[in-house]
Structures are given as structure tokens and as C-alpha cells.
Amino acid sequence: MKNLKNIKILYIDDEQFIREDAVEYLSFYCDNVYEANDGLDGLEKYKELKPDIIITDIKMPKLNGIEMIKEIRKSDKNTKIVIATAFLETSYLLEAIELGLIKYLVKPIMEDALLPVLESCTDDIIQKSSIFNIYGGYKFDILNQTLFLNKEQIALTKKELHFLELLIKNSKRAVKYDEFSNYVWDGYMTEDSLRAIVRELRKKISKQSIKNISGIGYQINLIG
Image 1: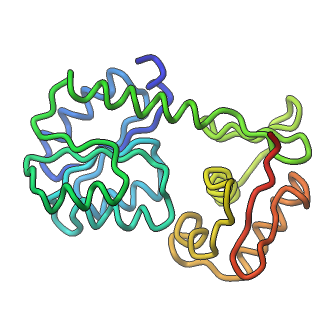
Image 2 (image 1 turned 90 degrees about the vertical axis):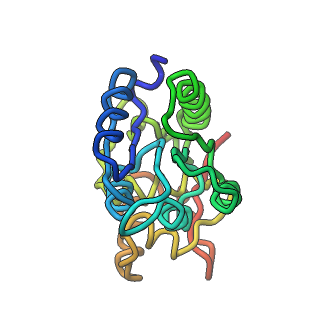
């Protein structure tokens, strides 16, 4: 389980005792465990922290787990999401499958059930988060969120980092304007702010590294 050390996990549950107990347990394996007390809080923490794995209850106040996941999936198809709930209901299970969830676990969650799920998530994250080669000789380590040219690290702002991360996670296609709006600007993007971040990133890497797909969005130019 050593690979979990650098993985970010967000645990969401409105029951304080269950949440605190889970966070304490997960912290034994992972150095980056965060918590949220309902779906709305979970959505805000997701936007702030960009976790690798989300473990969430379904029935919560303010915003239930399914609705929260739907919001996340509008711009993020890759974050690993595990549902942990005491209510094994067919309607929720069907929605969970459609939302691309990793696992549906029934509470109380036992260690022998959770650890294999975390191991599977972590192995997949590490496999997919190897260093990406960007046109022009640049390398982006998506796991550690760092950009390099040769051995020199290139400084990125928070928005530039999230913008580049979204492009790389969806490198096989053009990322749409509304996806940038939701993922980078939390839904409040202007055309000027989008152009500005593209312009600044092209200065830091290269003009050819980010392709403008007319009328759709942008796509990253990866090598290999």
C-alpha cells in the first residue's frame, strides 16, 4: 500500500463519528486524506483539492452523493469515485453504474473490502499518471503536478495547473469550453480569461503545445 502515500483521498459523510473514524483509518495508509460533511461541502472540497479518489455516502443533507457526483462528472470523467452507503437500493446502484463509479460498498466498510478497492484505484492512477511528454521537450508529472523542461521546473499558477491537467487527462480529444469553465473557473469563466490562460501557457511551453479546435475548445499536443 506504499503507493497510497502520495494519493489524495476525499471522504464525504454527514455522520461525524463514521467520517472521523474513516479518516483516521485512511490516514494510516495515506498522507493526504481530507473530509467533507455533506454533498455540498464535498463538491467545494473537490474543486479546491482535486482529489485522486473520492469515497462518499449517498444520503446526505444539502446535496446527496449521486447529485454531487453528477456535478463532478460534468467536467471530470477520471477521478476515482467509491460509494459507501448503508442503503443498497437498486435505483442508486443503476445511477452509480452510469456515472462510472469504481465500487459500491455497504457500510460498515470492513478493511478487507476497502483495501483492495484502494489498491486497484491507486494502481490505475499511477499507471495513467506516468510522466506525459508535451510537444517541445516538456514533461508533465500529473501525479505530483509539476512541469519540467530538462531538469528545470517551470512555475505554474493554480489555474494554469488545472487547465493543463484537464487537457492532459483528456488528451485524446478536444476539451470543450464549458469543461474548462467548470473545472478551472468553477463555472464563472469569461472568454478573455480563457484566452489569457492559453496565451500564458503557450509562453511557458510552446505555441504548438496547445491546439485551438475551432468552435469546440483546446487539445494538448502530446508526444508518444
